[in-house]
Amino acid sequence: MTESDDPLRFSGAIDRFTERCGAAIAWLMLPLVATVAWEVVARYVFEAPTTWAYETIYMLYAALFMLGAAYALRTGAHIRTDFFWEKWPIRTRAAIDLAAYVAFFFPGLALFLAAGADAAWTALLTGERSSETVWAPPLWPLKALVPLSSLLLLLQGVSEAARCARAYRTGEEFARKPGLEP
Image (tube, rainbow, N blue to C red; front, side):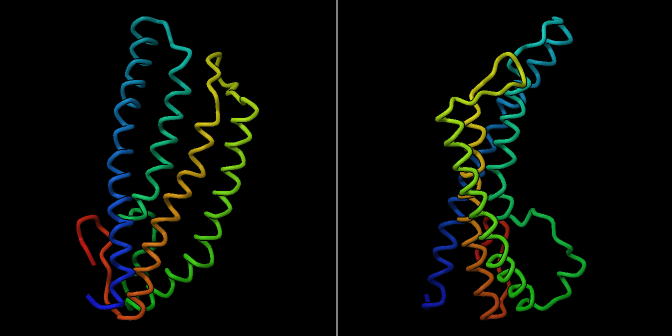
């Protein structure tokens, strides 16, 4: 292993962490589906809708969506205009990606992290509760998803930026899919 491969070892560790987190987060689909099924049966079979299902469903979906964003970044599932992208040389793609990470991705997520942490902390301290239903669950766990997902995305962004820097230096393509090591 050469000295230039050290950042990729670190990237590989981040990628494995992101993949494990993604697998764990995917399990949130089970209570989400169970809650939706319960609400449908309660509402349409027993004509007795619940007071808690609506908020539980949107909170679980928010957790899946937000916490799964880092895994989506790892696997290259975010939107890109591939018909232009694929025609550019590897170094050009790597330079554009790296510049975008440095100029937009990292600063934007740092703002989300700070603002989200502040909002979650304030909700915890004030005991803020939802006013959507009579159940009125506390909102700090939902608001805490913003800084947590920001942290996960920032971590995976470091891995992606390191891969971009290597691709720019070497001109070699890097793998995005889990199980395909660079």
